[in-house]
Image (cartoon, rainbow, N blue to C red):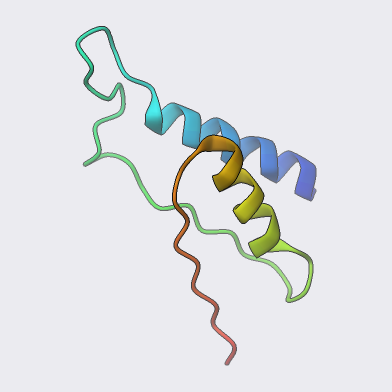
Length: 68
């Protein structure tokens, strides 16, 4: 999967998690939602892409970097 495909999959996931039914309840209950983990070699822009997606989708981002 390339970064463009990964970006679209993440956007689709965020939108699915935020989708609500006619009563205002989440279609996918928060108990069933899982964090998104993006893995790859250092320096390819994972954090930058996630920041862009978070801003585009209007959600917060918690980013953790493991350097060792």
